[in-house]
Image 1 (spheres, rainbow, N blue to C red):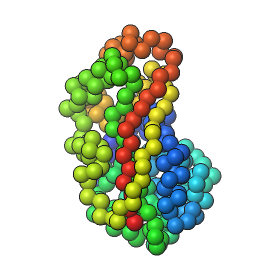
Image 2: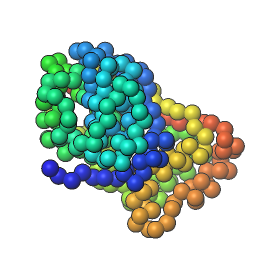
Image 3: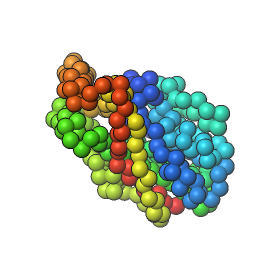
Amino acid sequence: MKPFSDHFSTLSAAYAVYRPRYPDALFDALAALAPDRDRAWDCATGSGQAAIGLAGWFEQVIATDASAAQVRAAVPHPRVRYAAAQAEAAPVRTGSVALVTVAQALHWLELPEFYAEARRVLARGGLLAVWTYGRHRVDGGAIDVVLDHYYDGVVGPFWPPERRWVESGYRTLRFPFDEVPVTAPPMSAEWTLPELLGYIGTWSATARCRATTDSDPLPALAEQLASRWGDPSAARRIEWPLSVRAGR
């Protein structure tokens, strides 16, 4: 079994707090396509954002992540059973789940091995659904100009090569399933400036920038944004483009 690309274990606590939640409309659409609502497997769950969402529609959610630190930081829920496990070796019975999901993590997985594991655990007529979101937008003006410079210029050299799959909305990744159309619902949050900065602090590129340069790029970003944001405790609407692929 190959070692996994661990970009987030050191960020587990912040990841649990600052990563955005997925819209209920997404889980509603996926549950409607699943053959039943008994059991789902959320692979590469991170701190459980998608698993918690699935728990509103499925009786049991098995949520796994290769990072034990991420699993320890995950949000508890009575319908969610967390476990530390790699994507190609899930603690899931063969043919026992109606839905397999991967939220914002497919690009980190060994795809042939994971796809084989998804086929193993899915029940007849079961569905695999994967999704990703790209760079966010705030105001369409001065704030986004600063954020784009940070994304492309400041931490741009520190993005892992897998980021290209996110930028393409997973459309260029091999997906060997009979695809089922799923309309991506709007994904948004109402965040203050400290919350936005907390989220940016969880980016893999921000973490790699800190580790490589021994310098934190966030204070300079916070200073640039402060004059454009206004009251830092005032919430602004943050929007992300969400791309979904699903197949049987």
